[in-house]
Length: 171
Image (tube, rainbow, N blue to C red; front, side):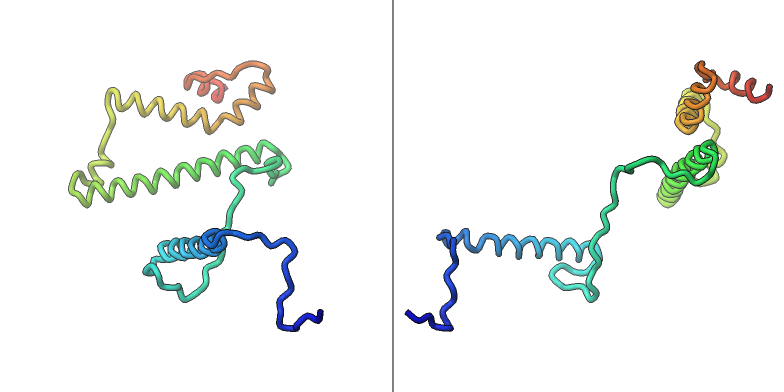
């Protein structure tokens, strides 16, 4: 029997699916496309349901965990450690300043206190003790790498009190 050119070829392994499951993948694709469009419009500030004028580039995903060794920028590893400590300090200080600025602006706009009051504040009692503990923990975190290397080189634990550290530097 001669095949008609208009007759489509038969599929080798055609499965008979119920009508609802045949359209499910197409519906899921349309639904996920609609969800993505809504997210893009929310992120760009455009009203929902309207296409944005310029197509958006796909989001860049960065690795959450660094792989491999830390890069060395200087010939001396000690200088690299100081660089990492400095960069960590920069990060901490930047975040702290941004948050402090926000708090000061909010307090002043709500007329709770003036920025001059914050500048003139001197902690006493429990507040001073809490600041001292927080500051000591911060310094320990910042100097952890240098302290570990010093302990490794000397073969003994490095002193942790402020007076002992000052005495070691002065000698």
